[in-house]
Amino acid sequence: QVQLVESGGGLVQTGGSLRLSCAASGRVDSRDVMGWYRQAPGKQREKVATITGGGSTNYADSAMGRFTVARDYAKNTVHLQMNSLKPEDTAVYYCSVLSIYGYTYWGQGTQVTVSS
Image 1 (cartoon, rainbow, N blue to C red):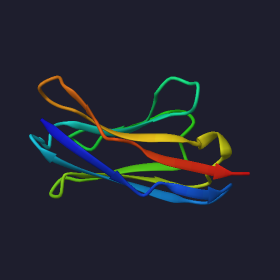
Image 2: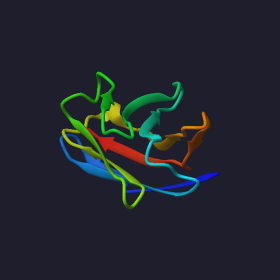
Image 3: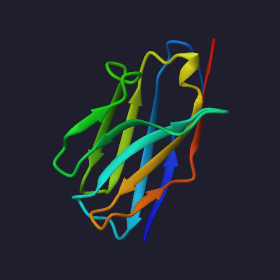
Image 4: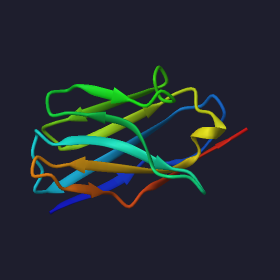
């Protein structure tokens, strides 16, 4: 089992920045893929950014150039730096771990609201 705890969400104006953090505990392996997803009201959950055990990153088109995902392997944490935020970035953001054993774990989610 893997437990995930997110922090850092909140309310920000258009053009502002937020940094999300996620601490993983339990059966975490440095080879796991960690990342961030989001779900806006009435929409499906979508990937924002992921980072592999080797440090390779992958971003949604909507996040490219504005968001940066980073990982601290020693502390089993993953961060999402979000800059130039837009109202359409408003969503609940979820931390995820895809373990090397094939299981996907989710955090409880943190609300990000961008006001226009």
